[in-house]
Image (cartoon, one colour):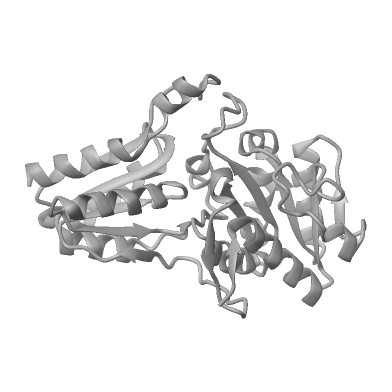
Length: 326
């Protein structure tokens, strides 16, 4: 099994989809010769040409709108919003157009659009280039939302996104791009709505999203040295959400910690906590803990950025609190 990076996994999927299907094409700012701001699409224009790897004007509304139109006409566009923060500029097209046409047409119109975007803190990009906004999109009926944390999941979920007849917003975290993992020789689609249990445990369940999956895995190793057995569940897709896997895990461990890099207040973790409370309340031996960023714009100064976003010690403290209270 080859070992590839998260970045290479995304690129590999895009290339394979374009080789096998002429209806798949890419659009975004500087994605052709430059390869995008994170180098994900580097080299694809050499193989597929400028008709299928299209640089666009600096207008997120235009990028998303063109993608909606192409998808309605039968293409399978993959559009890149350079920074997740800038998805705010394309919300009208994504929320009012892409998410609504299939429903309003009684299923006659399909919008097989994939919106790739990346973001996250960890390299001091400042307040306008580091937000995590997955919770916004999860509030919109008609969309699907994916947030893979590993190369294997990125490749398989992106393929499923491209071939879904609904619009999918596909989140990537920039600090995950260099991580490596083994993947199958054959690209295998991953079904939406199927969580992944990264680690079995018996004392507490951590439900982690994106970058925090890897933080949770390190915390689990530390906790094991102190006699605490941690189970880690990665939803992988937030819409649809595999509620059963999360609830079943909590029923087994009787405790739950939810973590993500987005701000804690109104973050997606609140939805997970609500589901656990509704479906597994009688199994809980302690209150549900939430670990996320502080409620502030992401600071530019590295020391302040580090203070705002969650780290291993924050998650470890939450694990110890819930175990102690149980």
